Structures are given as C-alpha cells and as structure tokens.
Image 1 (cartoon, helix red, strand yellow):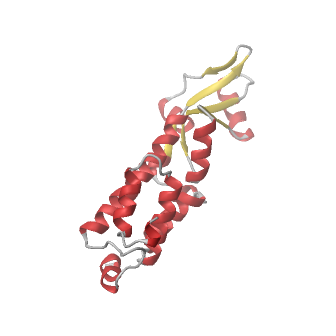
Image 2 (cartoon, rainbow, N blue to C red):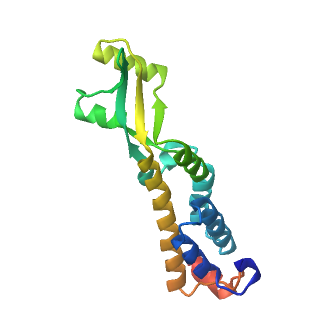
Image 3 (cartoon, one colour):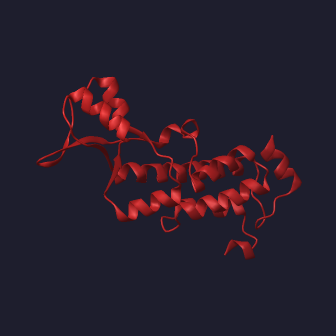
Length: 185
C-alpha cells in the first residue's frame, strides 16, 4: 500500500495504470486524489465526470461516442435495419455514452450486447419515415464500452507520464510547493 510508504504517488499511478488487475474506477480515484492535491481543476473535473457520469450532452468527450446496430422488431424478432440516407443512419446509430466508468464496468461484466431503446417520439418518427408500425432499438457491442474504459485508463497513464516529465512525483501522497506550482502552470 503506497499510502504507508515513501513510493512516489505518480510512479505508483503509472504502475497501476499498467496493471490489468487494477480496475479503472480505482485508478480514477487515485488520479482524482493526486489532481486535487495539485489543484488541477480541469483534470479533476474530467475525472469527476468519468467517476460520476456526464450530465449534459455537450460535456461528453468524443471518445464516448459509440456506434451500434439499428434494429427493428418484426414477426421474426429483432433484425438489422438499413436503407436510410447516410446522414440520418449515422445519427441513429451513434450514441454518446454518459454513464460513469463504474456503470460501464458493471455493464461490461454482465452483458455482451447493450440494448438502448429509442424514445417514443423518435420511434414514431421512424415509423412515419418507413411507413410501418414497429419498435426500434440500438444494439451496442460490449467492445465499444470496453474501448471507452481503456481510453480513460490510457489518458490517466499519459497524464501521469506528463507529471513525471515535469518533475512532479509526490512523496507518498504529499507534493512539495514547487511540484504544486509546476503542476498549475
């Protein structure tokens, strides 16, 4: 446990980011603690969003846009839907994922396919456009969610490497005034 030793907090964070047995939620919590101690407001806010979820669509980063398969319900069950103009199809099959990393990790452990239902309004508009009465949904492969979690893990590793490159290491979980000054500049 590095809290009890003199290991550098930033080096420990790097090691944890490389360790497949350390989950991304734990990594985010450690990064949040370091960002707080270094008064890095923007990075702390990003970590908070990743830990707690995104509350507005415009705050969701691009890497959280996933693509799924548009499906419609027929007498044979759920089948892929095609035939829309390219722009509409892209809009219908792209979904920004606002869920927290803990939520995503839970979904990944339980589901191979994540099913997102369309609102009644959107479903009705699709019915009007196709001239049929059915239900639509978006099916997202679990790998799309795994990719989000891995990107977050990579961003934390990159951030920890940047801190080290700038001489910010921390002793245990304490940072010198010089390290804090470098971090905020």
